[in-house]
Length: 214
Length: 214
Image (cartoon, rainbow over all chains, first blue to last red):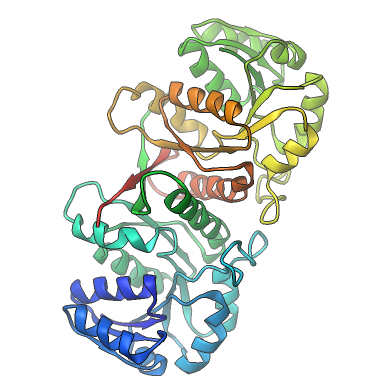
């Protein structure tokens, strides 16, 4: 697939690298400098290049949205018309100090995003693990017990695209239902962040859902 | 320990049974009928008996609060003075139809509860797994990889008590921080419920946090 990265920071940079290594055609866009984008593309060791958000969006089978919430409007404007596009978002609706969710409970960041791009297909994914664990999970991807990764959305095809990317990144895709479930997955993402950054054992944290018979 | 169960429904009934089997002295209280309480006590196969909420609270080392949110005020009133008591709550602040959280984002059910009983020590735990998985996890408790169970609270001793109960129930206790983190663990509980009851594979669902090196 062709995957456009909108927001090539910690999450976008690492996930784009992983998608490129997994065989996808990746365009990195929207970082602090074009040098950073070029470095990411060079070091991805795959079919990756640097570009503008508009270039990242052109012909993309999936767009990974990985900017800070305060940058959403700007990056969407730069990306241009997103009609029919599959947007996999891992942007959490945090305040500028990254201390708390500013949209939740009766809505979610993913739902607010979907309102901004009504002609695109939004899937909420990849925000429930810290960026620090991504390469470790990708490296261990042939193990029988892979960590889970929840995703939710309202469009079946868009969810299939997201599930493929999650699978390619070494996680077991867990369909959590409609986009409205982002009201739960976004606070869950903050719980994982709390355990990763405030708990003991380091930030390379992932999770796995398992069933136990009675 | 002596454990009082306030609310002997699905969660309270099963957890009380497990605590009794793990060697604790359990008082079941607050169910639809006193017959149900007596049946629970009889079938717990341990040191368990039926009682009133006040009897459950007397001399309790820990109180498990497992009533529907709409019953909180009533059961607290019946329990009497809870000064210095350790309250482990798994009550989620749901509306009467159990469709959504009614307290969240800028607060949590656990924090609201703590305001109601300022002289007690509240720990938020046991709400992030469905009752259907409890016996399965307890039965598998000698396995090396136990499922996780998050808990949070502000009082160190109360958290130690909660961690002991979580451990006794066969889970790996995961300290998620102060009680305020219930703002994340409560929506997480609804995510788990969504996966358990709306997903494929049945409701016997638990989760495990794991670290993956880079």
